Image (tube, rainbow over all chains, first blue to last red; front, side, top):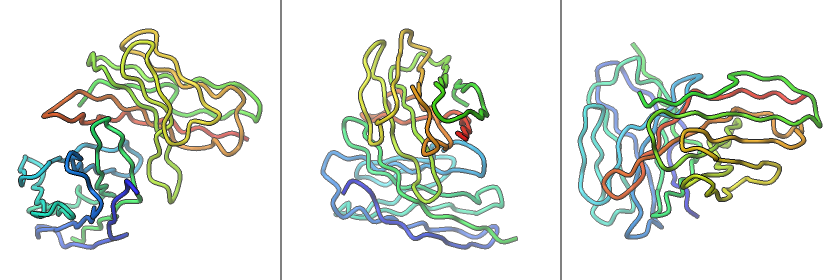
Length: 109
Length: 114
């Protein structure tokens, strides 16, 4: 199965770090890991992606396990605007992306 | 934000009528995609295009056809709409970054088939 496994929902307090886990135990050596998020009534928005090494950008950090069977999206300081559904996706070389149900993140003030 | 527009943004139609949704990009990206999103299913790929006149089927292509005669436009057609095709449709475009294609999504079209 090309899909990943994520918790259905998570909660966080505003201004605290958030660690969103993703399991992709059957990932192949050439599959990338992409993270997208979807705010209410909007299309998905690219967050970050990686292959083997940890990655950082202005939105988040991506920590990839050494065996690549799991990864964690890290939001360093959650804000109310980060409340969204977060999708972790394996991306094959042909760019076949299979979205699962994602994790619904609630940020409490 | 990537230059992607979708039209119409909302449409209500009746069962059996043809419907065409349009995706337009100003980024000159090679790849374009059509997804549908239903409650509890996340996004599912319908069709995608890897160049002008080059298209292929996705996970849920039955009942849909696509055409791409210009780089900037990707059309999704429901030849005879059914109630099961009531959904939110998203278009995406992609440009190769670091060996993989990061997709950028449009605002979506909400289609209701009565």
